[in-house]
Length: 266
Length: 185
Image 1 (cartoon, rainbow over the protein chains, first blue to last red):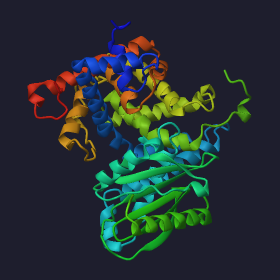
Image 2 (cartoon, each protein chain N blue to C red):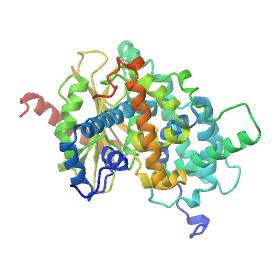
Image 3 (cartoon, rainbow over the protein chains, first blue to last red):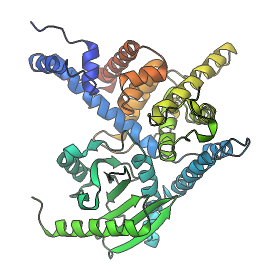
């Protein structure tokens, strides 16, 4: 007989990755022995994944002007003690978010019509601010499972996606996630250096296949975005770095991906 | 309560604040079940967070702290609404969620299935759905959730357990029988 029976609390903690290490062996042993328990754990994991799929897209919604305006009002210097940080933060949020609000639905139309993906850079900057600024959960799959991450993103995007290696530039891969676009999913890779500065690389299919490779730089709400469009893929590299640094990193990313493209994956 | 003079107290960090606002909106919608009331709540919570900013321990999880502030604002508003016998149910049990324009990205589940799931979450009592979303979607630790909601960890776990079983039962229902989220037995 095992020492302590598996409780509801154990099952919940297990599927949430919060089970105490001392209880894990008992849990794993019970899972092998008890098929009903194993089925319940599988159900709950599926339920967790579905809940995240259901609720995560809310994060990408544009903030309404009502809220943006109201929070901007909050930053107004009603009192001498009101510092500038909130105003700056809200202004940055507003410029990004209003940009998205205007551009979100028409993004692919813009890409089609003008070939100038200005709204794509705004989206890239917003996504960067949203996830790179998230200290605890910037990614869904961490770099420790890079292979799983890359396979999953490749499957979801419908083409082979790769995470460039930026270690020589001092940026280590943190991990990645899938980001909701309007029609097209986007793969996001997050990198971090020793100073905890973060870079993101976003990859998606272009709205218009073909066309020449072009490189562009844009500054959106304080976030530098360096982007280029290739035949089958659009890349956006974003970070709070100066233009020259970002361009230098962009060249390395481009070179690596071109080299990988030329050689079959191992 | 501050241990340092107001003048050199570090401000709330901008990148984390930026990252937190969409999460606050999401949590507010889960609480209120209504997107416009949710935005009122976020606005009120941001104002309260600003007043109480010295209580935030620099370096700790800003998101969890903002959730705590917002939860308290929500509880106070609800108590006030009850006291004034307003006909407005702030927690909109079983309602409200249906009316949303829900953006759902295509994944392994269909849009219909995910919308249905959100509606089932909306039918849970507010004290269960807030725990469910904080644990599963925000991935807070149970101790953090207990702190956000000012309840014991044991209560967090029992509410979570009930919420999950209700969702499982909802998807095991023959009405939802075509859903791949149904209980696999």
